Length: 151
Ligand SMILES: CC(C)(COP(=O)(O)OP(=O)(O)OC[C@H]1O[C@@H](n2cnc3c(N)ncnc32)[C@H](O)[C@@H]1OP(=O)(O)O)[C@@H](O)C(=O)NCCC(=O)NCCS
Image 1 (cartoon, rainbow, N blue to C red):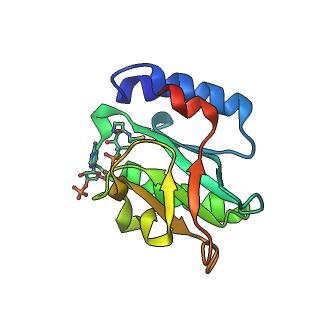
Image 2: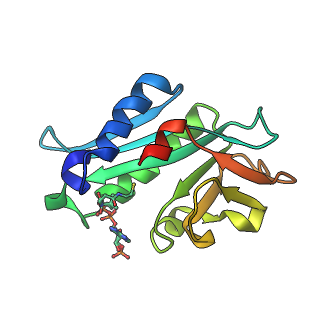
């Protein structure tokens, strides 16, 4: 699925690595007539100085090109957020398109004083609190699994 949706196999390889090396993970597929048409992955991330904060990073996410823009990606994001909440996740971060993720409640992380380890425009790194005030009084840089650096 990831190979089909992205221009290179890098994201698919990243998913393989994260599935082996990250715990816990939330990994969901969307299916139509028992055929997989989408996938979303959430893996742990860390915020500087907050080792107890239960933070998950959204991504990669992929929907089959033939099935994009039908709401499958949105359904995966919503189901993934619910699954993260169910395992006690306090906040979710995402590096993604600023017109897509705010509809799920994500807000630019810089409003919380939180940044990203990657060189990206500030509006594309977003955060969603799942536990009330989980990010109150915290700040710093979020770090993903090292495998993200290769993508
Ligand atoms: C991004 C992706 C997962 C969205 O899945 P989807 O099933 O098409 O999404 P939905 O149908 O739920 O929502 C469509 C919305 O996503 C937006 N969208 C889709 N791809 C987008 C992109 N590359 N950039 C910005 N917005 C995008 C559309 O503008 C649309 O918004 P609208 O409802 O205002 O028109 C899918 O397009 C995809 O797999 N793209 C290639 C891989 C990728 O870029 N993954 C995300 C980065 S990890």
